[in-house]
Amino acid sequence: MNEDQAVSALGALAHAQRLRVFRALVVAGPAGLNPSVIADQLGIARSALSFHLKELAHAHLVSVEQQGRNLIYRADFSCMNGLLGYLTEHCCEGAACDRKTAL
Image (cartoon, rainbow, N blue to C red; front, top):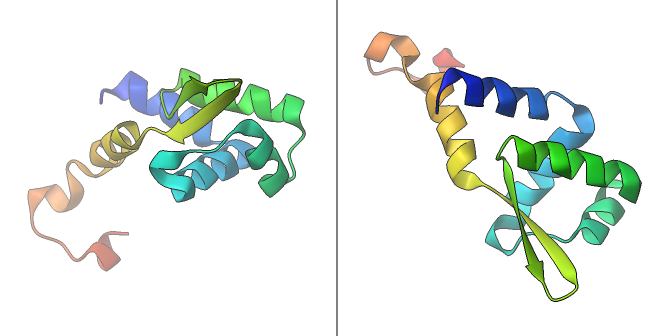
């Protein structure tokens, strides 16, 4: 992941509702969720949810797949792990560290 990609991903997550949506998709795992389920779980209006999902997809944090008449959204775990790797790439200047003290 490069700096521009990290900024895009962090920018997409820098909104409370988008962060909640992303976390719900992470919890759902590879099965993903359709927008109706997400909206019901989080109490988000479907029109607002559509906008937030589009922003997360634009930042490559989620993928979407059409299954029949339904859309299934999934967290993109490779992008998420890439972002975490980018943020922690030089943690403790390359030395072994205790994760609790580094955070």
